Image (cartoon, rainbow, N blue to C red; front, side, top):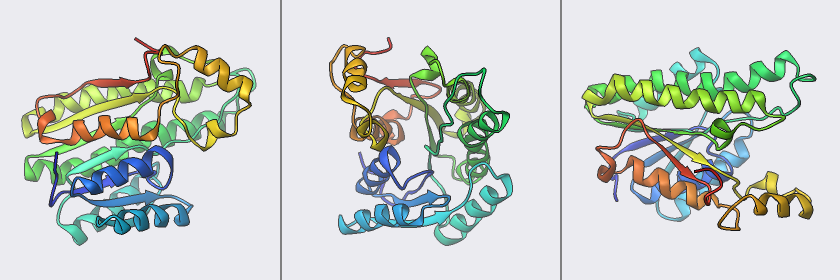
Length: 247
């Protein structure tokens, strides 16, 4: 599965799933723009790893939740590279807490980044995709968008919203050969899960039929398929990558 000559944008590409997806797209031949908002060193490390493996990558700073910033950043990418062919909406934050104690600002910030951010980026990306009559958009969702999760009403609502966004965009742009899909990870090994107590990890593993946590590479493999030519007839779908935790 190769994408030589294509340009990809990965939001929140500096760490975890975003970094691994960026590396995988670069291996497939994409010039990858690694987005960050405030931690330039993480995005720079991702690009360094891409280049060390013989790939092409650049960093670009913008807040996905800021409509004007996003529009400006995508125009800059087009001026540099000529097109945007692949968009991975991965940027996301958490502000966990029970709803009785959750601040309005915690709700707003999560919905703005995790849901509005995907809208802002998709709106900016589809114009060059329509011009080229080819494009791939993949939204990174979550198992909690389907199952819900106590203490994460804001995060679960945003991820559930991504499903409707995915399906609606898929219907709008299918005739232009632009596919829009979602990957919904379950529990994945990240910096956050590394910090959890062993008892918490054991409880998590008990909920997964396969008995192991997923890895960022598992998510990147699903993304790689969805952006490939082989997935040209797949749109409006969600691929669950969770070891059987949600079926």
